[in-house]
Length: 223
Image (cartoon, rainbow, N blue to C red; front, side, top):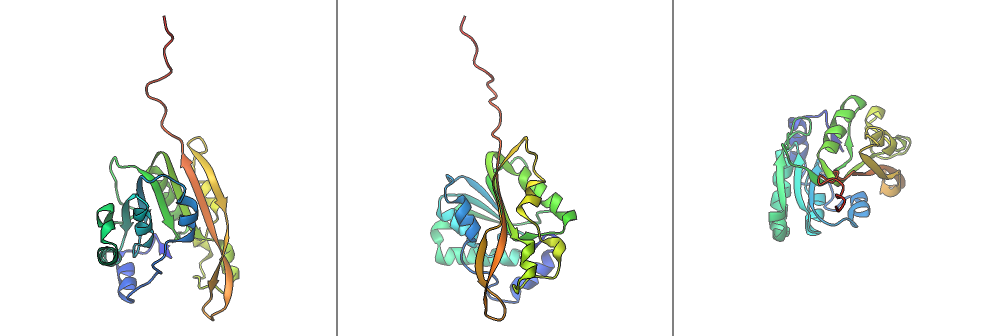
């Protein structure tokens, strides 16, 4: 679980504490929501150990993998070079803070973030920045832990303010510029700390940014 309000030192220490934090599998919501899109340029926010970035690159995307922790990205880059050297040239590992990173004129066909849990005062800024990095006609995919997870035995921090619904994210997007394609809370089966199988829910928001207007203007009438 990512937190926009925890800094580099926190995450570097978290990654140093174990040889692996996350699974080496792509997030199910990414696979389910993005598999049908033609590949282009992608920004993976909170890329961690790189499973999502590698999955995208394997499907032809050119990926910028952004994370506040250089420790995580060094691990991701080393694992990619060792196990998937064919993907090395398709992924840029970029250590940066989403709260301050400036991509300049770069925009992406896909911007995605998984389990980037933030309190409301950060959420508006963080998700607005992510949305602003999506190119015209591109896709924004935000996946988070749903508030109902706090009613389960899943390992979740007792911080209800950092959980959100897909509708919470959709409310931050200008309807004149965005079309909501998915706003859902699908369930998935996980194992809780006591070894019991339980159902948790993900807040899944997928939206498409309106394409830029035709700069050529309407066709002229023949004279």
